[in-house]
Amino acid sequence: MIKDIQERILRLKKEKDVCILAHCYQTHDILEVADFVGDSFGLAQKAQQTANKTVMMCGVRFMAETVKILCPEKTVLLPEPDAGCPMAEQLDKEMLSQLKEKYPDYAVVAYINTTAELKTLCDVCVTSSSAPKIIKRMDEDKILFIPDRNLGGYIAKQCPDKEIVTVHGCCPTHAKMTKHDVETAKSAHPDALLLVHPECETGVVALADFVGSTTEIMDFAKQSDRTEFIIGTENSIVQHLGIDCPDKKFYPLSKDFVCHNMQLTKLASVLHCLEGAGGEEITMDEKTRLSAKACIDKMLELGNE
Image (cartoon, rainbow, N blue to C red; front, side, top):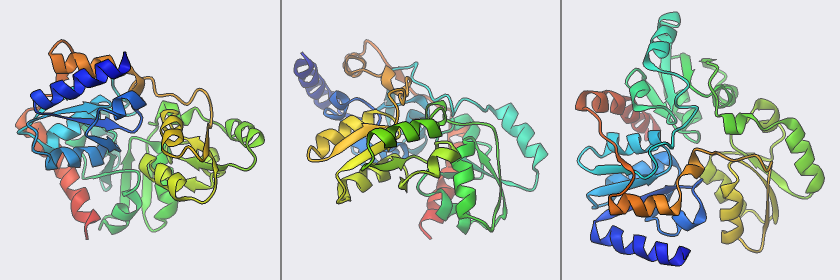
């Protein structure tokens, strides 16, 4: 049955000239029909490079918005309209405007996990992997980092010459992991390395053997000569790594390490979107797009120096 749906998807995406992008946190049956798999910004860059006139982002809304920001000439589809990001939605323009008034001398750095609307008020955008390098290269010494306090705190330790203020936002999925979860997992798997995302709480990150973005975690596990790993990010990565590296063992940090927004998108969601019976086209007025793109352009400028 899954194979039948996948074959229909593959046929339809070819007929309709659709490029399918899938974030790493999507289920494996979706990854198998995708043209590109990866982290959110990397996927948006792939969308720029493809010749397809329509792009479907299997992920959450801010990711589809980023694709639209970079690819205004393309039709951008989100197969599951209710798939949002709680962290990206914890701030709105009014709240950020108030923060800017409170910290008038601070440059605003936005994690890529923010809405297009918020990006219009930011100076620079960053990914979890590029943030330390980009912030170190900024001329400004005072930084207001939004929206993830955990990632902001992690970056601050790597940029001691910068004064970094964070807000109270966070990824609820990563933030609910505790030192107790680490102790339990390490007790069950004493020979395993702990690999975690910097969106985790400080106490969890401090106990990790490796800290990095989702793609960096996967690359580390694949390249390591160790054979057992506790994965401190969304549990879909445990499955993907187990399939990619059957000679190694991967364990979830917690059975509750699940992003329900990411898991809203099902294989059937992709099919229905291609059939025109579901999904949503992402639209954006040109003023918002250009304003949001400015902080992404600055990220690329600083990242390539």
